[in-house]
Length: 194
Figure 1 (cartoon, rainbow, N blue to C red):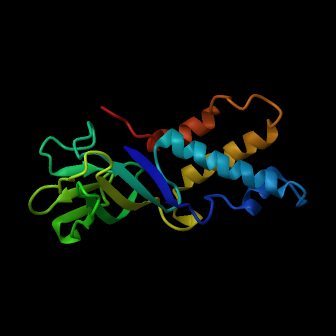
Figure 2: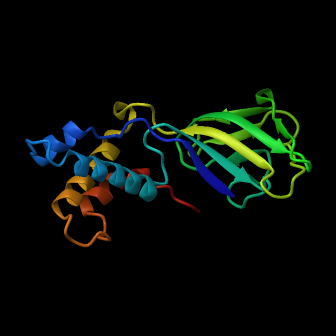
Figure 3: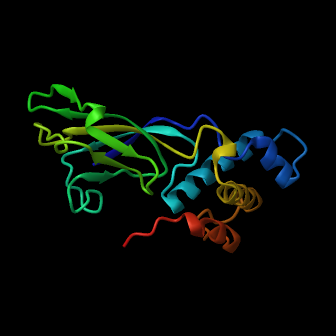
């Protein structure tokens, strides 16, 4: 099972100008540094919550559909990683001779309202790959939307506060625990596994 980023997010959930205003930086001397902190703290927020903030495209490669915790008991729904799901672009299976076959989208429903999003079979079963290894590829888009305004305010504030923390403590330990205020902002968005 491999998850590969195909198209990265086009913007960050916090703009450079907003971060500089929050940090009270009036010059452009450290713009590159602040931009790096915004990107790295966005990635940390995504890792902490298991969510994609800004829309991007992923390719997940699987050997089979029966991934524990991802396939439902009925075997007719498959959960995708990194909510929120925007769309399933394609589901491709590979035959034993490596010939690709795209599963007709009329055979499944992309449930974007669930958390996490999932693929639900409409008719028949999930297509079986002929290739034993990397026989399934799912191309999907995840994130809250294409702009910073699409991201929930609490997650944007968490990125802003972590950016400020990284900027103010850049000479300190990089493995610091999350500040309590950031933990509180992230708590409702963390994925709970049962």
